[in-house]
Length: 251
Image (cartoon, rainbow, N blue to C red; front, side, top):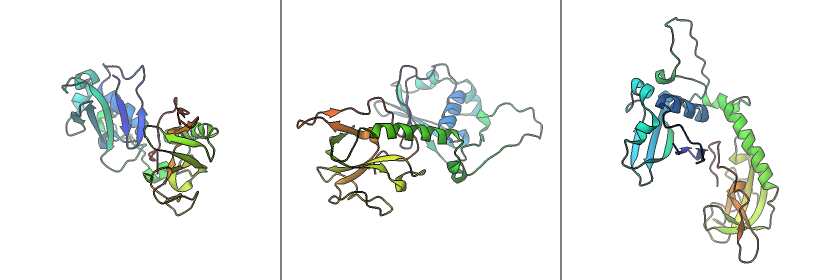
């Protein structure tokens, strides 16, 4: 099943040649989403959409635990008139990413009283460096740093998936935009006033000078360097996926 899965501003698994097995159960599918997002199944809503906008909502109110054990992705896909194209993961409550709190996705318990669950708050989880989320963010930060090597102030550029053009004004960290404070951002001065700032980050720190609404901070994978006066871009991020840590790709 080739579904495009998102959580907030993150794309969890861009379409590829593998996808999900059609016979995987909803229980296993939700467990996979739990591992990626940290959203416990009991607090997870999954909205399936076809290309023409039809929707099917999967959560504890629409799917019982028994159904989650037996329904497959193929059977769910057939509930819409058109094939499912995307799945959006939505957290319906406070997320404790290490807690496995949904009965549908717990391992069978023999009824003894010695089972101990361990939960931590989202704020505590976010500060730990040994978690799956932290390791994933570190890998993406390293990838962005590598992409940024070819980007430097003064270069003409365009933005991927956009008709906006301008030139690079800043390359480096913008602590106000990233939890860890060491990820790489690109400051761009746009030709037209369809940006979001004047070179100033949300905390008031100025990284470059430009007219109001001509400035933008974007991830390196959004930037395509223009090669000549005709401004045909070099696709410097052709193999780079989108954001994974809940931070928008542009600010």
